[in-house]
Amino acid sequence: MSDSSTSTGTLSPDPAHMPLHVAIIMDGNGRWAQKRGWERMRGHQKGVDAVRRTVQGCMDYGVRYLTLYAFSTENWKRSTAEVSGLMLLLKTTLKAELESFHKNSIRLKVIGRRDRLPQDLVALIEEAEIKTKDNTALTLVVALDYGGRDEIARAVSNLAQDVLAGRMACGDIGEASIARYLDTVEVPDPDLVIRTSDVVRVSNFLLWQAAYSEFVFMDVCWPDFSKEHFLQALLSYQGRERRFGHDKAQDVPHG
Image (cartoon, rainbow, N blue to C red; front, side):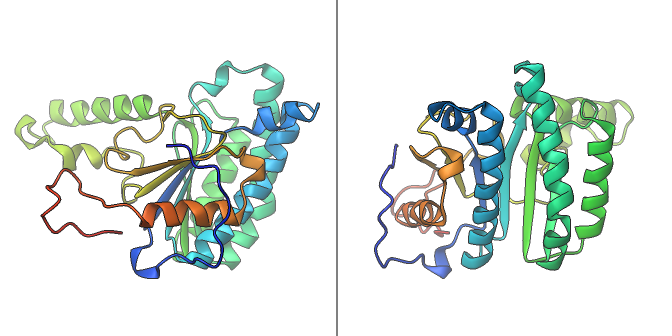
């Protein structure tokens, strides 16, 4: 589904049917910049403003979890200059926003691998996670050096080690036990996944967790993603019937 309209009129989302967790594939930064004759990094820099608008939108509408796909396991294949620029942007943004996160009771959680990240960035992440761990207004999950397949592979490897060590029996392995080994432990599965830039694919994002998520694909590039676009996605979500594999006649909660 591609949804390009941004006109919401006087409509407002129903607080009773608000998604608990929204996840976003923030796509289109580079293309946004290139269309304007600028270098790709300028698009990434402008994308930070869209992150701020979206975080505020979550706070205003009562979304409790927001996951942002910031850097994938495949993004290492980009040019050295772009990768270095992105790592620097992540560091400067985290430094600039940490006090605001804490002041507004936002908890930061970073998922993905850390062994390939710059050590000074890892130190900042750990500092931010510790400082904000008791905050409750919003949990901001940043997927960094993250890939859904890599996450599942790591989870299976750790689970297998526990079976070999006798800490778990093979018969105890099930969906719930596997979920406990994922990076998103203690984070509910996303109700709504948004992807910008009108690309219609999941790109290795939350493959396990998004099994029954609703998806909204929008033709706006991430730097232009506004609070009105976010509202439009929420309204689209609230207009759907979530069945989770049940028959239509069965009573399935919405929201």
